[in-house]
Length: 71
Image (cartoon, rainbow, N blue to C red; front, side, top):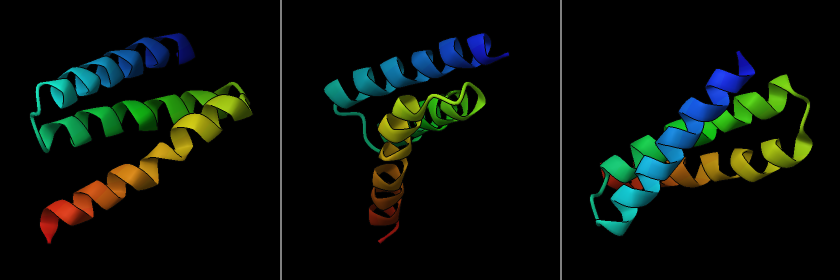
């Protein structure tokens, strides 16, 4: 299960990076945020604190981006 979640989340992260480079906003925030949530879940499932720290700290940044979008 974690292996499929890793690859799916990696796909979302890479698509989010591509959308950022193409300046396609706000879709990049939603796609990349989905990947970050997936990788945080993988870190939790595998008890990998480094992964949870890296991707878990990205989630508030995406939330801020979503709030900024609504304002």
